[in-house]
Image 1: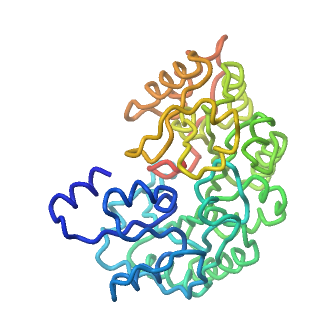
Image 2: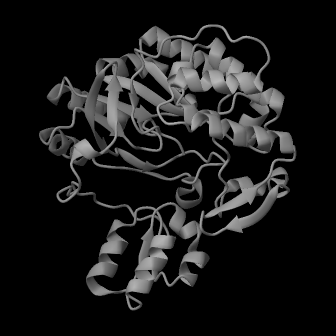
Image 3: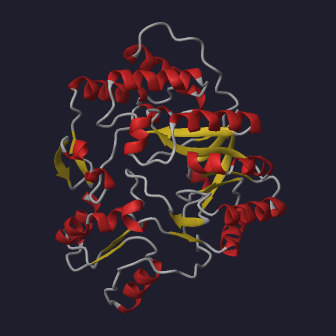
Amino acid sequence: MPHLLRVRELNPSIRIACYGLYAPLNADYLNSLGVEVILGGEFEADLLQWVLDGQVPNADGLPRLSFQVPDRTGLASHARYAKLRVLDEERIVGYTEASRGCKHKCRHCPVVPVYNGAFRVVQGEIVLADIRQQVEVGAQHITFGDPDFWNGPTHATRILEAMHAEFPQLTFDATIKIEHLRKHRDLLPLLREAGCLFVTSAVESLDDRVLELLDKGHKRADFVDVVEDFRAAELTLSPTFIAFHPWTSIEIYRDFLKAIRDLDLVANVASVQLALRLLIPQGSRMLELDEVRSVLKTFDPAALAWKWHHPDPAVDALAHRVFQLISEPGLSREHAFERVWNIACEGEMPPLVSRASIPYLTEPWYC
């Protein structure tokens, strides 16, 4: 928001548009700052119309777009973005999307208020052309940024098979729900054969009641099964979590740490995942729950999110301390986990599995 205000200060007559998942959720606030056009999902056609002829589009609904290959000329070199790190090697990473939106309505997800269970596939030839142009300028690994790569498993499979046939040395990663990893476990060998190095999955919690409240579509046992499936398939799972939420207790947090340790996942979990706190934007389905509304304080327009306090001050204090511990630059995942364990758990922690073979991006993914 400070940047928007600064732009308005420099040029009071400028016309401003905001687009993306958080724009329509904060329309009233953005309008109060002088934003003329606010667009959510599938915004390109309406944004282009506004730029070309100045007409404010009717942004209701989700149009079905005919996608074009992104024009990436003028962007910074791939070398300036996050890298893939495998052992002592760094690889240049490209990015594309095979689909947008999501068929699911997880209660905490910012995609849901905008797409409301809809998803749109990007034509396969467009995705492949985008990958091709990035490989030509040096990309060695592709991140598929779909909210869920297996919302359309047949579509995703065709893209992977074509990509691997054309670029057999190219590796990739994708984001896939635990629910889909269980349902389509027969596709895990395809992921490995096509060059998948890791899959990010938003597990969020290991407490079944919390998972039900979040409407995640899986249980703790499903996550444990996926961990075993991935090891059998020789794939790497990168789970993400919401460590602190209104239902977190000291006992639940300790159980979370112990499960990560017992499943030998310390090396797989980015340190920031040990400290993430539930984000509640305007329009979030979390606001449907009485237990959530009862902990809300004020809406912070600069952060575009509600401030909330845990009913137990000791949990908020622990969350603050954990964030401090994991924020030290250069701290390894193992060392960060050990430090968090020492303040949250009782007893000596067993030795940890080495992180050496776990591939990861130098900029951790989280939502």
